[in-house]
Length: 64
Image (cartoon, rainbow, N blue to C red; front, side, top):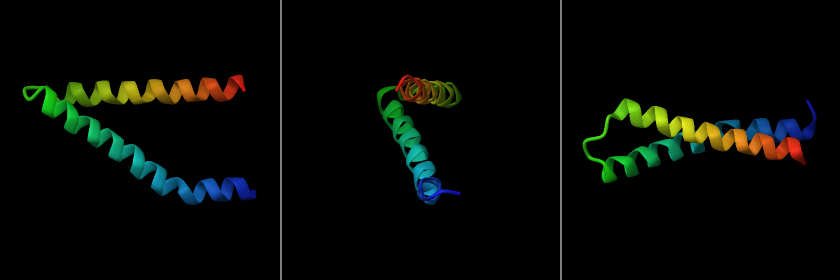
């Protein structure tokens, strides 16, 4: 494994924790704005939006 991969691998736990924190934060905001929300539907939609953002980042990477 080269140095770049070692460096990224060492961040893996932190990156995952940050992604989960962003998800939970968005669930909190959604709960504030729509108190009667369907939790499962909100979770699915937030994950879809997060996946769209990841897909956009992948596309940008491939274009450069």
